[in-house]
Image (cartoon, rainbow, N blue to C red; front, top):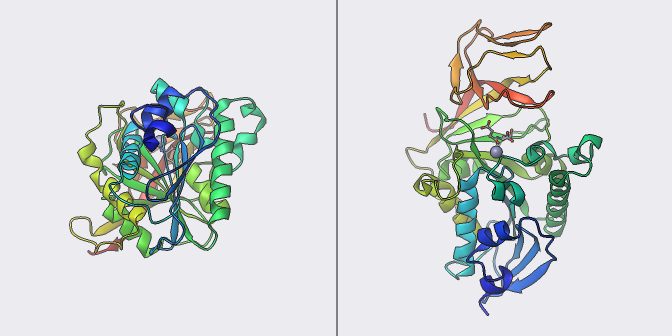
Length: 350
Ligand SMILES: O=C(O)CCC(=O)N[C@@H](CCC(=O)O)C(=O)O
Ligand SMILES: [Zn+2]
């Protein structure tokens, strides 16, 4: 029997199966591709792939790729699903172990960012907070963390990278950008910058503190080189212009196949690096946010502009212009309303 048929219960592909099984508790199932690659479906939307023993892993690495941690960010889900279909159809062979995760199948089915609570605020152990007790998104975040832990343990000695793929709610003056989780003393390896450029991601944002997002968990606890990667704008399934996602698709395929990195090429030959200078948090009922709802990511504000205030605090842009990323006033008290950022330099040519 065709492995897709048996693994995906006669659904045409991994995504269709994951959506159809969104509210099911699937037991672990194991399969083998004709070339000997082991495929373990650990749960709905979670595939652990192991190349056959003896196959060379030229880049000496293991990859964790996640998409759909926000259910309405569909393009990266479609890209990852397409790569899985290619692998299962024998179009290329896997060189490195890979853990592939569709983060929040229930939210994906609903076409929503999340169902009860933003899952990308539940990592680094936040899922265990009493206020999230009993919520399916907390259980899923805990499970995804456990999968990552087991995968990292099983592949000690290989370089571990995690790319958590997203799309942004609003338009962006910089179409694709990556966020690098904060770790004391860490700097971004050149090979990772080159991978981002290969994926046509031209902007990198350095986080200023540890957080509860998925990439912060894998970076902090598993010592992975991790990135949240924003690849475009949120659209429903079937409405994405997947030509705009060819960069990440090609770059991931190349990594899965264990091929060497191509030389960096214009126009994707330099990465503009920004740093977070201020995180805007919803401080409660008196919080007033002065950025309009529809402003694009990377919109710049001049020194002195008041960005937010409440009855005790007022945040004004400092002596140099600052730009905003992820403006979103509709978040619970204590959560991020946006990030104020400033250009820090660049990597590569120019
Ligand atoms: O467009 C938006 O407002 C949100 C897009 C998104 O989901 N971004 C991630 C970034 C995670 C990080 O800071 O690494 C998120 O908000 O979870
Ligand atoms: Zn997202």
